[in-house]
Each structure stands twice: as structure tokens, then as C-alpha cells.
Length: 144
Image (cartoon, rainbow, N blue to C red; front, side, top):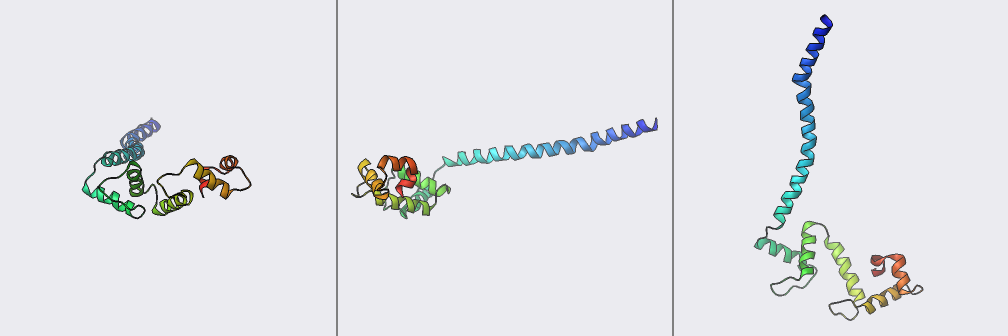
């Protein structure tokens, strides 16, 4: 009988202390996942809330790279400004990309033509054909 009394006492203590501690641990673990989802959702909701300060921030982020005139941004300029402001792209990377663009765009217009691109590839990889160079090295490596 005495051993069963200890078993009952152990079960009672486990129910009073162990179960709540276990539940608290599981709750904390679940809270980590829920908190992360909530933070992502909050950032997504804030993303669409723009004010005048956001316009100035977007334009300011671009002024280092582009000579902006007027009161409008193209789709590409807006995209670039948001990448810079979010930290998804750095100013150094954008500088490198613009340098590559200026190297390939030999006629200094607003677009890289297929001929300009292939001429650059042939200049960078003279022993390989333009198509084989692009296939072997990848598009970004070719642009360097």
C-alpha cells in the first residue's frame, strides 16, 4: 500500500507541476513560429503604407545612381529604390551593375541591343563564339 501512495503522490505532483511546465515549453516553441509569421505579416501590411517621406527616401536612394529629373519614377527606378531601401541590394552592387551596363551599352542610348551584348561577349571571349561563351560562363559572368 505504501508504494501505491508514493505513485499517487508522484502522479499528483506531475499533474500539478509537470504538465503545466511541458505545456509552457510547447507553447513557447509554437510561439516562435507564430511570432515569425506575425512579423512577416506586419512587414507586408506596412509595405503598402506610403507617405511623402517614403517618396523622398525612394528618390534619395536613387540619386546616387541616377540623375533624376521631374516628379516621376519609372517602374524600374521604383523597383531599384525599393530593393535599395529594403537592403535586398546594396549601393555597391548597383554601382557594379551600372558600370557593366555602361561598358556594354556602347552607343549610350537607353537600351542594350542584342548586337551590343554579343559584341561585348566576343570582345571578352575572343576564342569562343558568342553563344558558346554565354552558355559556358553564364549570363552574369559574360557581362563582366
